[in-house]
Amino acid sequence: MNHHGTAQDEPDEHLRFWAYLSELEQVADAYEADKVREVLTDPVQTMAQAAVLRHLDRRAAELHSGPAYESWLEMMTRATTRFPFLAQRLREWSLVRAVALGQSWHPDALLGSSNWLQLKMAEASHTAALEILADGGRTKRIRNTALTSLKRQSRRQPHTNIHKS
Image 1: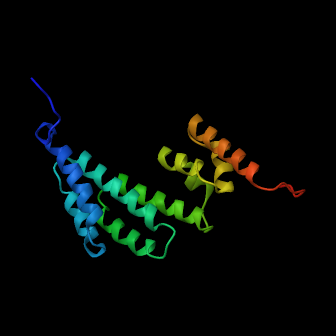
Image 2: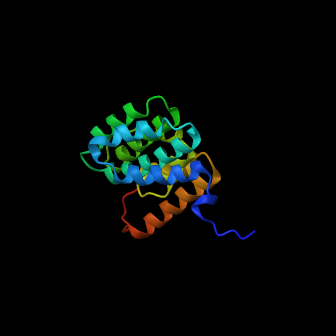
Image 3: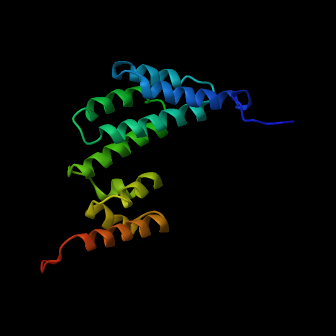
């Protein structure tokens, strides 16, 4: 039998996943929460939540440093309230925002966050977060990534005679 990888060969949930991603990418802001809720009614919850997660990550990355983030976060929090993993990801994006904007945040929030967030932050350039993760990141990969980021950052910064105490 000759297999050409046509759409007929894809399981239904794979086709729906890609269709959901496309719909979520194109939905108007005013209807975004409704579309997220609709996707989350799919009987294959693993796929539905994966599609919404991808959408949340894309939108949060676009919005997290701007003024529209807070209202978007509130809207998405309401739309995903019955889904703990999605709610956690939104909380973690708020931590990304707080760190990036120099807002108040607590080291325990970072140390208690998922491997995804710790690795994301270990690849970033916020010195305090990098120091925390280099010392106490959950995995060796996270600690090493944070340490590498710190070293790269110190090579880019001019050296002064001021030392931390």
